[in-house]
Length: 505
Image 1: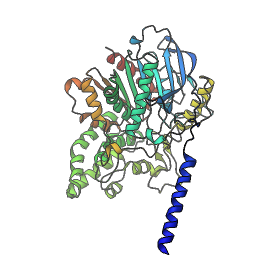
Image 2: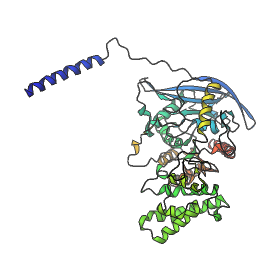
Image 3: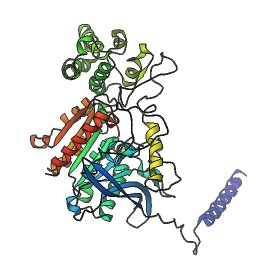
């Protein structure tokens, strides 16, 4: 009886599967769904005066459709491109491909903060003004030196995978490099920029992307880049991930902790007079006693541990008791809560100059980053949405994703059981292209991508003397988005001008 029941069940299952297959099978006269055509980018005209030079320009706003070689659409990449009018020879006019990071960030920060022809007015320190927000002409734009293309990777801004396509194919280190690289190839092809000097400009994870693209564009398309701007650089993730057993971040974040303690007058009095002198002393301590004793782990003597505790307390303004209980390893989340705890405030991660307040002062970490949520998020989100419609005449009912978690989980399968480190990709690109110039812009109060971690990364690329001449660092008394600070915005423009001149010699 049991065997008979099994046989009946088997037959019924086969019949059911056959029926399902017939229902899902495409009928002979059934055509595949046709997606509506993507409108061509909208063109508008503008004018800006930079350094006394009046520039008339054309803006293209819209989508570039990424397709496979069979012509099947895969993703719609949103971009905003500014090109100077009246240029007859594009081989003499640079083009800069620009993006922010995250992963999960649109290009709005660099676009509306410092590089594009419009910017968001802030206080001289970088504080947001009262809403509603607006934009003004940006006399510090880079448009006098280069045409500008701002790229929003998939699931940022208005960029999305095409209906029916799995968005996961774009959300990861390799996946992102391939899709953004394909966009750059398409743009250069469609708009005749293969003969133009080409630059990449990235911020934060955008510097990771830029370094990755430096090798990918060369190896995949034989497209060689003239220069790369790394604003708030992170190329080696081991320098920034606070893991048990990974002491590097504790060492490399210390100079930024010191700069923040100096700014808020929490540092020991003998170190308060001169920030630069103090930072040099802290850097020396990191490279010698601190790194050596951390490497010893629990084998360090009590005298060594005590010496480190006392120096860390002087350099950071934190109590010796707190530092000792943390095993002389100050994690970033604890620092931004502990530094100003007695004042009832928290310090910013993106920019340590800014402060916030939590529900109480007893927590281990802050409730929000005051340099993001209470400073730049509102102005940049409100302004880009208004600017797109009012100035660029572009309409789209999708939400413009400024900084989103919709890209998560980000795929790092290319570095399983390792930290992502794209500095080697950049080194190889520089070796193959000896004309490639690199500029690193770093803020002293940036805890997202500390300046000393960027220095460490480049010091471990083993660049030859002739290659080191192609790398230039500049520093700012501001944070991750140093350009929200008026004085740093002006300096950033001067540094950018020098970089383009150097790269185009």
